[in-house]
Image 1 (tube, one colour):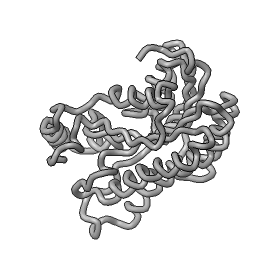
Image 2 (image 1 turned 180 degrees about the horizontal axis):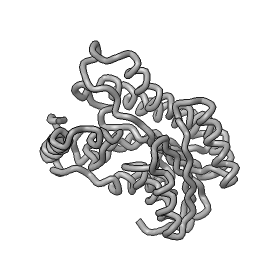
Image 3 (image 1 turned 45 degrees about the vertical axis):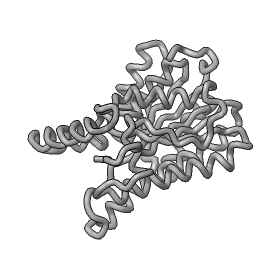
Amino acid sequence: MEKQQTMSGRVALVTGGGRGIGEAIAHSLADLGVRVAICDIHDGAERVAAAISSEGQRAVPYHYDISDVEQTADLVNSVINEFGRLDILVNNAGIGGAHGLLHEINVEDWDRTISVNLRGTFLATKYAMPHLLEQTHSTIINIASTYGIIGAPLAPDYCATKGAIVNLTRQLAVDYGPLGVRINAVLPGYIDTDLGGRRANLPKDQAEEMFRRRETSAALQPLGRQATTTEVARVVAFLASDDASFMTGSIVTVDGGCTSTFYHG
């Protein structure tokens, strides 16, 4: 996508922007002339901001926990103090959650997944919205998952949060469309990334096996491969742009066709 001068001067806040899909989103928005606030609870925000700055665009890193009320309010205030405005919110921060049958999952693990994935989306939206309402091209892009529209094995907490984000996107579009804010959701499928850095915490043989299983499952989808993070980010950048000016409440899958097939991996 070529740079659009109409995006120059706008400000985006990308949560979970220190790696993976969030990192690619930050770069794609910066390529369009957007000034980017990059928030991540983990290391990486500084690295991404430095890389964007080295390319001549403005980016500022932040470290906050978006599941915490006070920290999220402070995050948004910090962005406004730094940039003076907010036009785009990308709710990307999330965790993979527990892995198992529902009755085997610890209550603490369930609550943590809900807190980061759903509560974090709520809090960032809540505190960003008053500032988005002040602008004329405001938009929110929620990063959900194909697991938000299908039942995936051994992922009850993750599916629950992503399904909630999908329908929250529709509801927010109803309330805020008349007020000038567009809200859409992007649902990635098999993406060549490692949510939560799980492979890095596994023995080498287990990490390789996890990657092999993902590759095998992705190969069975219509496009036969995993996507790159950039392929997802370009869709997000499109939705943030004026080219998507008549899109709100849209649930956009970026999944190589996997949700169109019988087999879901």
